[in-house]
Image (cartoon, rainbow, N blue to C red; front, side, top):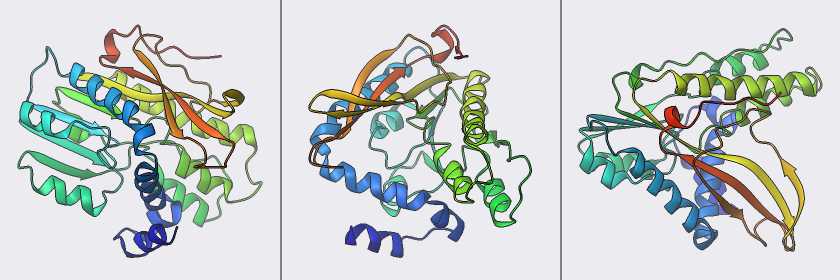
Length: 271
């Protein structure tokens, strides 16, 4: 925890992104991967394999990775070998990622808020507004004319910081209102992906399971009622095996990986 605190203190980042928890989350993922490297390995390999599958049968001019994060789940070397340009998009990039990108001539880093409303949510809360919550507005200009767009384990992460920031206001908004807010962020991203002209590869969790001794104690819907196509590869990601959270509890994600979202049967919605 001390190392994470020092990283948080010394890593360059805008004050609002720090306050909203974006930097803290990236550093926490980095540290958890170091502790749970073996448990994470199958998940990361599945992700890389599906991304590489998505590269087949399309032009190789530009690939865009949304939610590039720490690059743990991205086959960056092979993508750079195949594509003329690889664009890595995230709300912020840690120094290690920036250093790695500088070593690759055809990699471009883009700092962008893929939720489309981090700034608007910050202003809404800081101004003490109580009216309708902001709606996503995402500048997707860097995705234009791209042959491959990868949404890399991003979908269910998009609502977390804005939702947490709004919930920090106290009981200004009901659970139904905050749930609707989170669902709107997810729906916006899915609509964005559906309208891209290039091939779209989607990696996402679909369910969070809390287990004890192999028994599922609780199931959480990280999609807030949205539903993804039934096709694609399914697997478990043991994201926090015991004793990562407690000596008796495991956290497991049910994952889906779709190499070509447009041929996956459309995007279904739960009622």
